[in-house]
Length: 530
Image: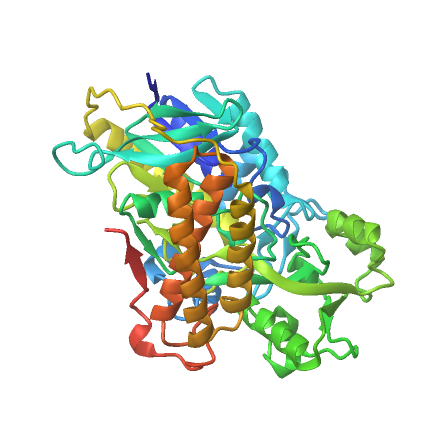
């Protein structure tokens, strides 16, 4: 027997939770499926803030111009304008849900500035904005009688009409999810599924993303024949705290917005050699500059100098960062922070329109998993949280209309069948392949690329895909197997899209095509499983 809901949400970040609250308030029964605890999401790790026009000295056209400039010719201007125009209303809604944005002594909202922004427009809750938003939304979820939350459930595969050979146009019917506590695959039935699974940071050896960011939603959509685009545009955050660990603590761009300076190991401020905006240039430029400085000298990191920022401002604006650094032996008023780039954000993903609709009826996507055209070839800092809440609201409105116009079909979904498979006694294969895909992507599909490197990556990933496909069909599924299967698929999509783009633009920089090709400006490289 399957469990039936009006709407299923996969993921529990700002996009999924905002969407779930909206549709539940409209009277729909909602299931939230999340593979870890509800609070474990990329949103929870977002430090800098949320960009929106809320000041009289700013206007939407300035925000649009900054976003288009950062996107390097690949933004969809209509999408940019509509999403950013909804910014102020979305901020007000978050405030009504209990998010208390940091204020100045005079009671006005504190607005930060980050790279690529011409004005101060970043609303924040000190340097834990994402956590504050997540906590407020989770409180609303817990208070809703129309929402059931299924923690430790891993969404495995979408169930569609085409897969069941149903007549008529293809559409979503539900999904299979692995209960990681019972190790049983459960069936969920619904006419609407929202993908809000975040990004793909764990595909790379070094990332600011939590362990959950394995590209699950993109992989599920692609296997269902849904259009995926612009996967080559991976944003590397310029300033992650350097350590020998794979996961890197993010040092918010807002620190540079308050005056921190990047220096090489000789103590020289180097950004003026790369861009007239110096340390506040867009992230792709700053990340390549750091990469260049490190390769020229063989250094393992560069320095971020915060010593000229008043101590009170460091404590007031960045208490989380200050405490973390102090635990690492770095006092921000006296010492410089060792920083390196790390994989941070995917600007491509599942193609949607401005209602969050994908090319498959009943399947919606919002947040980092989706590609709306807002980010283009490079995301402007702090536009992501704004896009997530705006698109969640738009998607919820669209779902209400879809449920009224689409007819429920009395259909008993088939249960998951393991068949004649067995528990694996070769777990070392998964561990080895997990490490190999992450190293391959870091070494060959990083900040600076070349055709030869990309072709090497494709050869390795294709071999891994063959291995994991064989493994998947011969052994009982578990969380690590499912994550690795998804990681290898999305890694292949990144490589294939990168090989199709014979130019350097935004976050995609290749040594073989260092100039832009304006003929590709509107092509928006896209791939589909169908």
